Length: 447
Image (cartoon, rainbow, N blue to C red):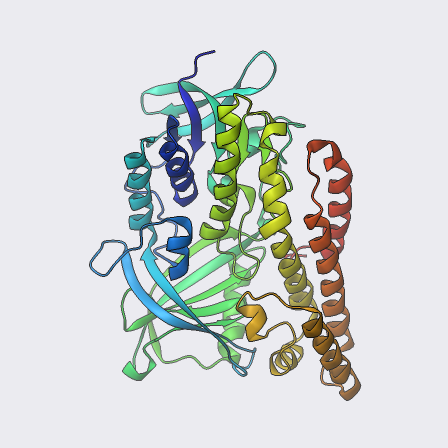
């Protein structure tokens, strides 16, 4: 069969653009369909942050002062307790960008690499061959219904996951939609501070409230963010609670942005015959803050290498794409499972006073853990000793201890399970049963 394209990607935001660039650069004929117009891509939020080191890591263009997508650069992040104490500092340099303008830059990077992007083109369904395997994509434009054939289809459509949720049952990838219980509802307040002494030089975060203060494009201002499960109303209630306990500078509110980001473990399997899921459509977000741009790119770098081999072998079956699952789940997937489990159990089971003790004694919320460094047996033992001391002295509640210990135990079990992700599809059903059982014990942040 002659195909119109080697690869068709659904969605031209950061994930779709990046994967299109990676594959077009390898010489493949790549088409991206995007339901929005070029002037609307990447407009759900104004500002996004990315670690400066990640630009080099992923081969991304870094905005510089004077560029349309440049907003600011700062160094220094503090993570604080519920009552604004015991700051844990990291010295990472962060680049702030205008999301729409940076998405357009990535669109252009993909086009320069050889990809084609069709805007105002909305996915409707996959096309299947006589064997029931994906061989193309159907979509609609202002001119009417269209379709193209391809060897490989990739869903980078975001939270809507329009491609993945259209897959038939049993195709190898979970086709369940992302529900309100699976996301964080995010409210961003853009404010201007009244006193120049309050202008920001870095950012701060308060995990117990799922809240943060970060720079914005105007140096006089800040973004006050809050995330919550279930609804924007819950997020607003959380912000009110946050303001009662954490003193904020006097400010004037200029505007509010709202959106959602997945907050649930990523898919176990990203691949089916002629299909890959990535980005928010695959729930590839960081457990500590819900950010998904670079966490998805970790998977896409793997996917590009594996897909390249599969396309060259003219075999894009799920079995031949399976190494995407193996390499991701045994790597970032395992690490994220440990962190997500520990955070969910701790946040749901600990009071503000418990959090204060955790911060004071470097239990979970230490500079080493927040900075993403590996913790060893000695760190775990020390945390255990401090937990026991807190229990004996009544500094922390029994509920918090049970939740934290449960989170650590379940987290380590999930870490070990992910590290043993099956090498081929034959062992997947058994592995999935074990993973489901553990994640059911963990629950969701929204439970």
